[in-house]
Amino acid sequence: MDHQIIIIGGGASALMLAAHLPAKSALIIDANPKPGAKMRISGGGKCNITNAKMGTSYYLGEKQFVQRVLSRFDQEALLSWLVKRGLHPVIRKESQYFCPNSAEELLSVLLKESRKQCFLSSEKVMNVRKRDGHFIVKTERRTLRSEQVVVASGGLSFPRLGASGIGYEIAEHSGHTVQRTAPALVGFTVQKEQFFFKGLSGISTDVVIDAAGQKCEGSLLFAHKGISGPAVLDASLYWERGHIDIDFLPGFDLNLLCRSKKRISSLLPLPKRLTKAFLLQFGLEDKEGRTLSSEEFRLLENLHHYTFAPAGTFGYAKAEVTKGGVSTSEIWQETMESKREQGLYFIGEVLDVTGRLGGYNFQWAFSSAYVCAEAINNRRRR
Image (cartoon, rainbow, N blue to C red):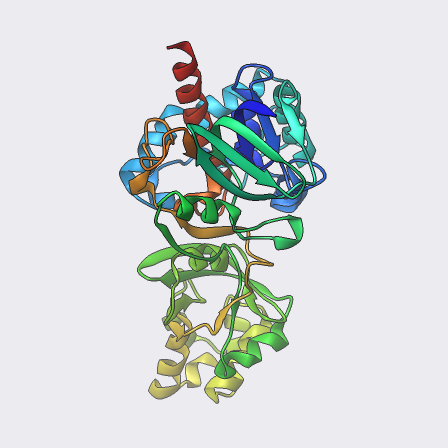
């Protein structure tokens, strides 16, 4: 069976690409029964589509490459494209654009625009080889032939939703460098010294985390396995190994304690259960602030710089994305085409570009898909 274009993957980047290609020009192969499996659960089912604040500072990856791709189809272009198709995203959390009601709204638009293509569902791609100028795509059940192949298979996150390393395998077979992958936008497990965190499960508080020199602000959630929440998820993007530094009292002046008759647990802007847990760890009594000794005050200052080394992360099963991937130095930024193999393209999460929490990874998926579609369409016109 011959096809002009085979798209491997059925997620955000694959569907956006299919929406911008001529009718019946592409075959989408998805390991899941239905496309957009990961999109359906994103953002608690609301799907954080993009962000009003956009730029390379929100991404881990080669800055010039990221900027060039984003500028071709930025958040304003994406929002305009969606509005023209009846979807009006709403702003939440100051700058984050979500679906008004459900991720199904975004998925409905993408499926409507991409249904002009052919779909092959519940079928895994085993390998891709090039022979006599054509790509041979072998799945579990059949062998297909195509002029061009676009790898939009995503990363390793959420294996229960069909995630696999097939995109990296295809890249490596074609001579590409795959930068080391790791779970990202994921919670941290803790060492023995922080096991008391587990007893605080369910408590949330605002913090600022310094991970590898990157400041990550937002809430921290104590969980059974360790710590999670938006600030922690962002910090995981930059953390490799070693220590992180948490300010549990951002913007709070501890000197206010020294003049107060109130107890520490009433003065600190933290949940009381959390304050008492820290006092216990520091070996401090819950006493009047004005009675603190200089040594006791020094111990409390650790709350502004609580430093420890996470044991690891919650892993791919809980990670929202995968960092690392196909090296962008081997991809043409104008087309998303491989520099190693003509007619082979890589888009979305499979590349070594990862965004912070807040809609940045969906924007990358859509931007890279648009750039790829333009390149394929221009080639067809020539």
